[in-house]
Amino acid sequence: MPTEIKRHANGGQIMSVQILEGERNACLYCNTTDWAFGPLFEDADQAERFLEWLPDDARTYSDKRLEQLFYDFRQEEASH
Image 1 (cartoon, rainbow, N blue to C red):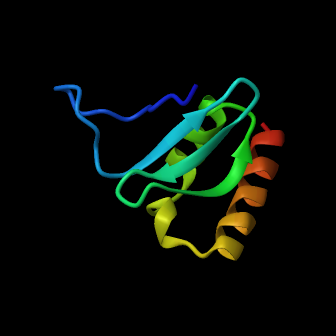
Image 2: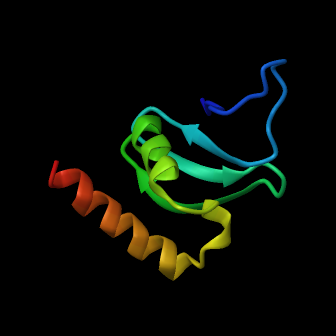
């Protein structure tokens, strides 16, 4: 069952990148276009860390650039 992570204080959705989490992994989606994109994450926590690590909105990157950034993110996480 999908889990939406970001919400307004009043419970409404923020127009932004959301995280869908399943039983074994998670992914990103844009809640304004209902389009999933980007890498497959181990869980919602990893997806959230990646979104916080990115300098800009994940939707602004090309698929190729997002893939490169995810690789860099994973390398950085593995070194800590």
